[in-house]
Image (cartoon, rainbow, N blue to C red):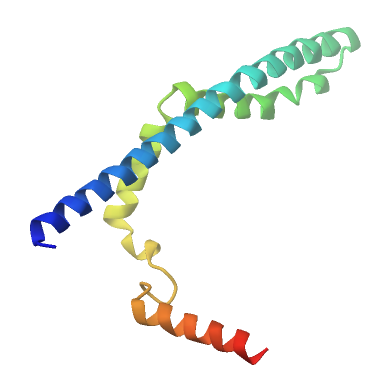
Length: 129
């Protein structure tokens, strides 16, 4: 294969990987939106019920569960319809630019030699048994 053919093949692979990433992200957003429908219904019923209970029993402690449930609801809404993904993307770009050392793999990058060494050791292990 000539260099141009390899470049074309690599470009196709990168395009395919990006397409798969976009589909996975779309599924995550869709899941969040679907979850929000069910959780929103639960949250609404719980908020009304707990508020009613707090008023009838004159006990504001009934309102406490609304607070953590509100955080979950807000997070899911932000993920599904808000700007959470854009903020996460910005933070990820910042990490890639300014905190590269936190992304290093233990023992460095995997090499062909290290894979072969692990494969030989594993096959030796199975042969010995």
